[in-house]
Image: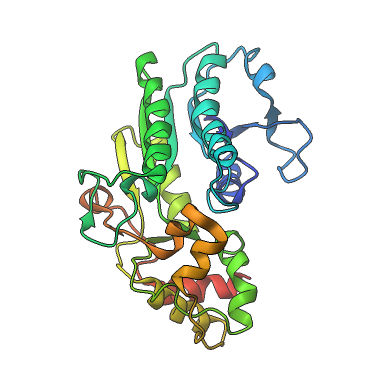
Length: 294
């Protein structure tokens, strides 16, 4: 297939492109500048202006782009940048393409459901309001606009993606120093997913035309943040003792602290109904696998 990707040089993108290249797909990556050294030389790099000159139809557009929502506090300027990198870019791609793509597989996040510890959220559960929900809703709305051109649209609401690098890499040093204790009591839910299952789900959705609508892409195991902290510390042979109080995170991160201090219980109901084969159901097995790959 001819596959266009945004965010190809990101954490998920790098793992996904390796898998896609093994199957001899022709890959095109949307980039800011056509000299990204992180991309395999077999991948054709295209800026938005170059995308507009493309004289061939893409079979699939895999939309991974989006600045890290947890990288910096949510100032007004930062919120605008998060919208631009997700919502605006998604719309720009659709308007730039001369020929509509046949299939779109777009990312969203479990932040769609808002900030809460209460209740279990399936794809049909009404969300709680807040910035995280507004951002994800707008991103999904932009993706669904592709359907107006006859494109099949599938959207994955991602949990915390665990794999070599990514979020775990940023947590690694505090945990190695014994500072990986529970955050704000640790009773908030921690919806997670192994990078292998993310890659497999995206690839399956590019090939199976029955994938349409929204899917929660999280592991079927429900765990708390405290349970995750204990499991990750154990995988590094370190203790997870010193807790991080809520007030300290709120002081440092402001509104964004809610990503760490609150967490919803998310169920992958639609994937389970279609018998999607998760490779990693258990957090201990997932982290053990990742430790072997580091």
